[in-house]
Image 1 (tube, one colour):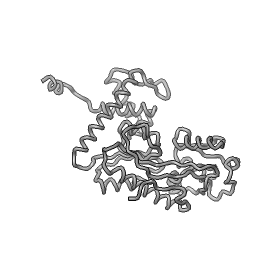
Image 2: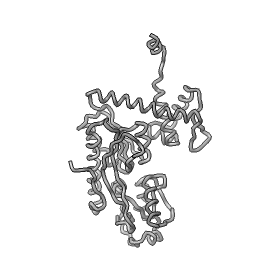
Image 3: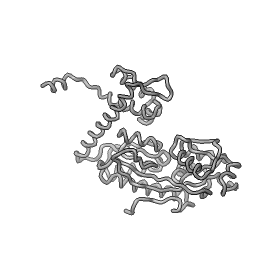
Image 4: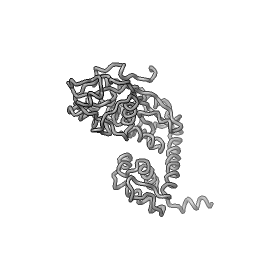
Length: 329
């Protein structure tokens, strides 16, 4: 009787879940604007959710005088509990889906921003036609965002450039292995066998240090003892590629990073790197035992779609530069 009277007397605001979700996103991105973009809402809406949460709890969670934002002591405590709460809610929904014989009601996929445009149509068709998914939500983001999205269970699958071994309970399907290449303006006739000599003619347009590609490239250049000045950098492949196409610099990029720019009409030439080669792996990751054969089928679709796009947009490249790492069907 006591439990029943509590249930009757308790008025629960389900918007609290959304406010908690916004709070976790803000904490993990350290920016209200980025968190709002990730959750598909306006900055003002995200800020209002934070205010509502603080009002409901009667505490201040975020020190708004600091940039980037920092948590108060109450905020630190809530963040630990909030991640657990969101995980439990998503686990409850997953269990309900699994027990229900109806098709998956919603599938959320985080995609590397550089290949999201290429993959979105094929994945949408696959979700609708083969798995009868009525609603598909796609997130275009950077690889380090995928850790946050998966850990907080705000995405079901991620097509990413890392294995994400810091998260337990994931299954991984390799999609594509690709080497990094030297990218120069169309028709450039300068030195291509010495990066230092090339940099005297054209600066290196880098991926920013905050991106996984930028960190990997900087580490590799340091490893092979090549020091190049920092002149221009960007956080997205098209931003890096545009100055190269305009004759303002050269870049170090992999085949899949070039697809969008070439599709937009950017004119470039591609050459082997004149230093020891390095590569990146594109992988599809999903939570274990939750989606049956779906992750493997989606991984194969990603591989087939990327290879077709590379062959169409960059026909001069061969299997030496990229290869599918999934076993044959």
